[in-house]
Length: 98
Image 1 (cartoon, rainbow, N blue to C red):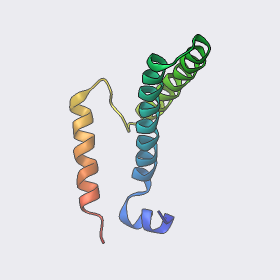
Image 2 (cartoon, one colour):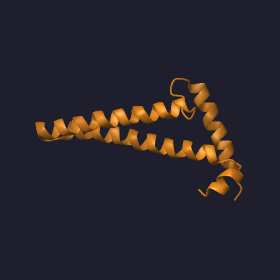
Image 3 (spheres, rainbow, N blue to C red):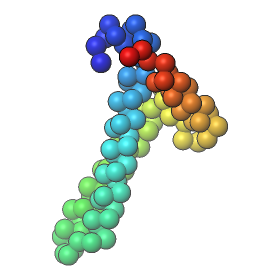
Image 4 (cartoon, one colour):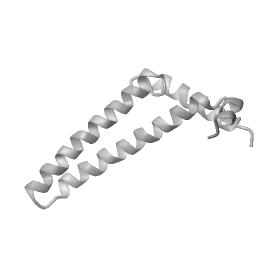
C-alpha cells in the first residue's frame, strides 16, 4: 500500500502485521507440506533431505511467531487476547474508506 494512504487510513502499523501474518501462514503451510512429504517419500535419502527441510521450516515458523508475539501482532498463548486483536483488525478493515 502507498505510504501516504497507509498514514491517512491508519493502516501503517497494520501493514506490518498483515505481512507477518501472511508469512506465518505460509510457513505453517510449508511445515505441513514437508511433514506430509516425509511420510510419503520412497527412499531413506529423500526422507533425510525432507526431514532436514522440515526442521528448517519449523525453525522459520518459530522465528516468525516470536517476531509477531514480540510486537503484539500474535498471542499464541492467550486466546482471549488474540480474539480481541482479531476483532480489532476486523473493525479496522471494515472502516477502511473505499
